Length: 217
Length: 248
Image (cartoon, rainbow over all chains, first blue to last red; front, side):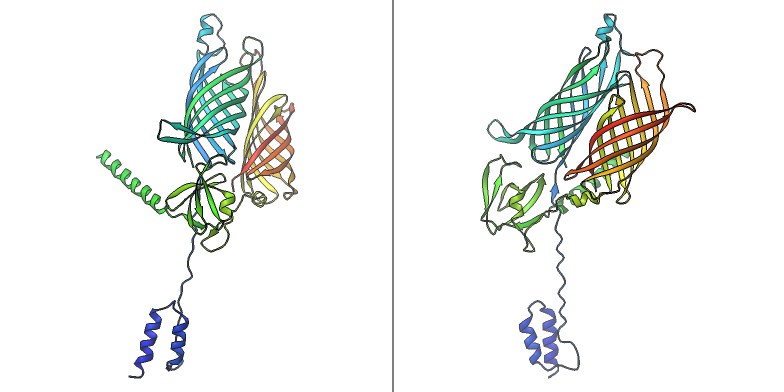
């Protein structure tokens, strides 16, 4: 009979773990059989795992537009862009795009400059962008979206007919964010490179208007 | 039958994606310790403050864009600046701190990539490179350079070993030796021009300057020795300036 009380106490104590001091004192007053350890505290170390915060500084997307090459004509352009936002004011973007260049109009007047009537054109550029006017745009009464007007400037290369031309570009665009992670861009850019067909070397201005969508990740 | 199989695969993929999405619903929580926390309507200092969270409330950090955090508390959502989040307390009761990308990370970088622009024998040049840092002093690189000029286009690609004797300096000089190919294609409009396609050895002297965060600047002078044939070995000089980013 006497032996059952400490055992009962032990079993109660072993179940009610975190309560601590009160139980320790109670155990001290009860008679202990032999050299058994009275309390075996088994409190597990709490495993605090801090979840990572999702950072969305990179942007990847595609765009379509019209690229006009000086003296040649305007053709559609399809491109992809990857951008990294350094802070709320600056970002770096790289683009690569494919278009074509055609001298049909010139050839009809006797001046055929390119190896074939329509040649593939590829350009790539790395640019720095500056968010000039971060803002909010409103559509009708209900919708407000974060937006920003930005300026771009960079360097790259334009390749067509087996020739590559060092190209500089300046431009500006507007970025609208219907969701935090989705962006729509409308960009106008001027690509400047030196071209020497017709014998004279001049710096040509080639404008591109493009509309693109990209995702932040 | 084939479409059934695809439908099943798609359904399984969908389940996996939604399971992952649900698994990612746990956000870090911090407690506001300042008098109040201001919530802006967008991730920028110009966006207006429309809501505040008072001291003692627990907020969830949903996502981060540059230096702004989208937070949620008591049903309110908004953007808080990093300075404000830095003043909050974590679940462990200490002040929230951020692990910036520091100069220390730059010193310990392992993989880096870069883009440079310059001049090669009078022609505008652009190059890209990827490097793997084997130890503090040596980096192995692979690079592609392209120069477009009035008369020809030059393409060079090479593998190089870069040696940095003083990697701890903020402006750290380097010496590089490389081997590769050097190709020069004259423009189609020129008559009688010869295309060059030769092996090259090149040596460069330059410096890296740690700029900020993940960016560093790099300037170099490189001399290519092109082995045209047994009798002709021609040097071509390049000077370029560019930036690099390090990945980890």
